[in-house]
Image 1: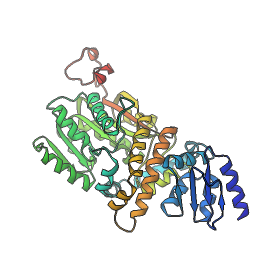
Image 2: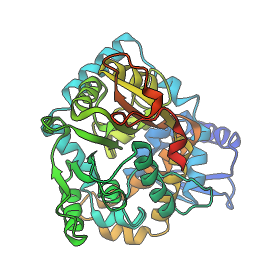
Image 3: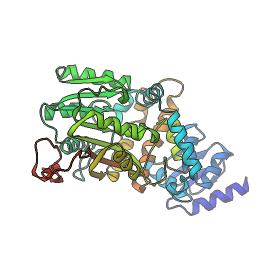
Length: 418
């Protein structure tokens, strides 16, 4: 054990914050007044700490192989400081890795499997999510239009930012793919007067939003369906389409199919907003150092990331044109820290909302997931892009700058901020 202690002492000495580690045998390394104190119960965890395997350490925490005292923000500072290099670089592969990723992506995105994967995450417990999300339960990147906005204000700003980008107008047919707990669907209906259709694969979300629709008296022009996007009827195209936080669940091998489906669902001249998490590295499907595997195992089974350059390539191949691209990466970092802080402030209440033999593991996993993702966005390992799309022009025309009635996009982006 003395050799392991020596390695751990050397690692701790290089960190930007004070850390104390209690070994499985009770021996302590580091000051008693350290900002973070780790109580390690397993020798393998010590090696993961020494080698900088941040994602594997996350698994060790979920499985109860160590506990900690201190703030979650300090724990993430520790995690980022022990990394041996960029997790973007360590997640790169070769042609064989790319081929295997493609084959896996094809296999794990059937209709039935995607439904199961979505329900694994979103149907965990409505009461649990309600504790740390904003009152509208908007489970996606907020938009801090002003730096001092609260989370609730920033989420409403995000909903309006999307509606403004789409230039929603009263009476338009609006489709929200992956509508979650109905934040955007209901905001668009109540504030812009659209006829709104939302879809989800989560049974809990489906039931919740339909209750809200009835409570708000919106049954005549708002509906929420339990449906896969691949099964949407294409016979009557929509004027405007939003897909928020769903793109990550599609799978890299299905992106062309996904964007082609969106094109067929959109009327010529209409607009699509695709809002989704993207990879920080051009060749990455996940973050390295074990962090991607952690997300796959405990949080988002079947989730896959791609770089914005690949997203734009798939968009073009699907017959769509990107007319506006915005990166909201630091907005998502702040959003995630707000969620993490809210969860950390009421851990006992959160624990009470979770049932079953895996309840404690789920709580531990979400503590690491929210703070870890905040760290990932801060470091640029992942990003969040809003991409505004329309059909590629079928023929050349000279009036696109003259605000023709059949085109929704004005080719001047100042309209988004008026």
